[in-house]
Length: 311
Length: 311
Image 1 (cartoon, rainbow over the protein chains, first blue to last red):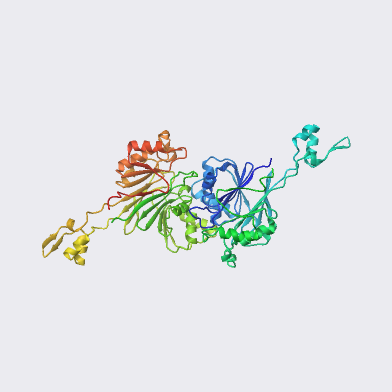
Image 2: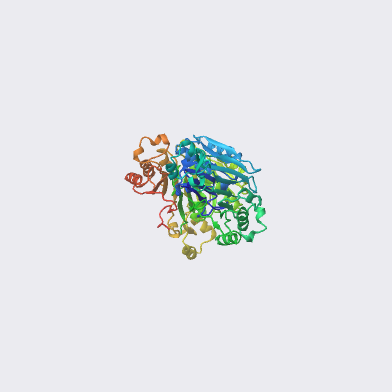
């Protein structure tokens, strides 16, 4: 049985939030872990609305230091402290963020009684920034007004999974189980009793999610996120802004779709829409002309990463 | 016709917000002006939900520098700048806030392109901090863990209002109108033609609103807010916490009611409820035993200040 791997959009708006829509924030859930990606204002209320436990958040990834991507951190950290958190929290961000958080919490008379481990991002190349038992997380450079990173979350497939009935049938020893998990056939006294593919389930495909916000179009991005099952790419503008998007360091819906197409992504979610678009159907339609499996981000929606039918 | 004078509760929760409830923030509307009182996280989304124009906000009052009372300022000011604000904004708060706001916006690479005028609060005594054509605003000290002020908004009644038919009837001159507005009878050639009360509408009662959050019980507060039409007083706890509320520097619902009773307030709104109370009916009932005209704060509710029937 595959672990749950789901993305919840907590905030999809661009810098100016509306009454209905929060600034950028996403929760990526893998089994019992929650990876928080950006933390715009109101993120803690959105986490509560989606019944996502603050305790399960051990890693927060901040793409860049524009307020609509991190102003929710002040309140979230303060609430974590008030709820009695003791576990360490890892924050991956521009090194300046450490100073900002410490300055504000000190001035506001709050000491955060739990350890915060800051990890300064690099903006030069794709970099492995976290490896857990089941997940590898990479940062990669985007092209925005200030230093900005995207993030790639790649599931680690842990060897071969043996069919329980085969353990029973061949009365596999501890050593035989270990070898089978590494891909070996079952050989006893120099005789092949079963091939590995008979003993094991078909190998699972590793699933991956990538987050790209905010950025102007950059052909390199597709290379960083090759074959991801689910890609989020900002689409601040529609084709009416073609030619002007570079000046704002943002992308059009078609450019987001081009990245998804070049990367051979499974599915594309677009968001970070400018408030100039009262209805995003047009942006969605434009992206779908290039990459049909494009969807518009909806807040409080839970999207599986990868094929849900593949167990 | 009296000017509109209404309070909208934008956030009523205590330090830990819930999925349904925002931290402290209120908008006090007088005619076309909006006075913003505290600015917890999510305030800008709540302003939008209540269709309150950001442009009409020229004065923001911050009671104290605990995050749940000001963490919404970062996003609000940033949005004001993005919307092209040019008009000055006045902020009344502890002097530290100026440093915090400047530090964060500089670090986040945002210059706020409109003038912000900081007014440092005094925590010693009741102080007139703003006087406009139609309103006087006072700060007064509360008793909390850190320096904290309450705010009193007092409508200025602008002299006597002359009945238009009297101007016609007596063909009042400019000078006579001025004198009548100051309370004089109409005297010509040493002869009294009409008493002032015949010439004018009955004098309007000045309306007032006071905001008290966060504070432990202090008998002095009633003196600062004597005879206000509408009083907001925090009621973090119920009677189950009696005797312990001082340690938290907060009040019980009964203490809030006692302040309203001593002040001879018209109406009391209680809020800032601890999340330990899933249902605030009990806190409301406790307050009503002492001050029957007590109501529980509800977000997005618009409450008139003073008697709506008195035009």
